[in-house]
Length: 162
Image (cartoon, rainbow, N blue to C red):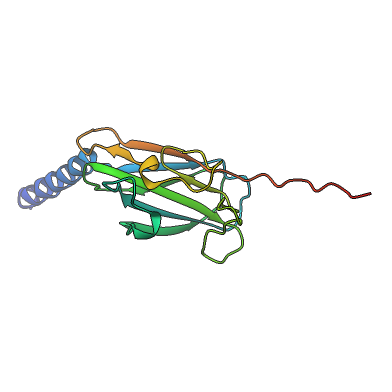
């Protein structure tokens, strides 16, 4: 009876080892979003392929992945498993007012906490997509980690008029 079970147990063990090895070979991209100051709302995030030219605008890019997750801590890890080697962009924003859109001021600066891979400055407004590109190498046996620091716009205190 036990001898009949050995081939099955061996096959199951072999299958588990093969699946574990395949997973270990390509853990994928991990993006850590930091500097979440208000623990509320949702984090909307997108993964794009890096454009070929600097003239490409955000409106013409088509996201490869577009998701959202509830914010429960001051940092989040986002996983993109089984990603092929190439140049990518990750864009994220915290939706504080629940309208599922990133709101902008009149001069093009985001009103809600937002961030991009490579953490470009938002001082002059929304960055070009090519400023946020990074290289991902699937052959790297270690998990890739990209850190995005949300840019939390400080509210100016209004002076009292006398």
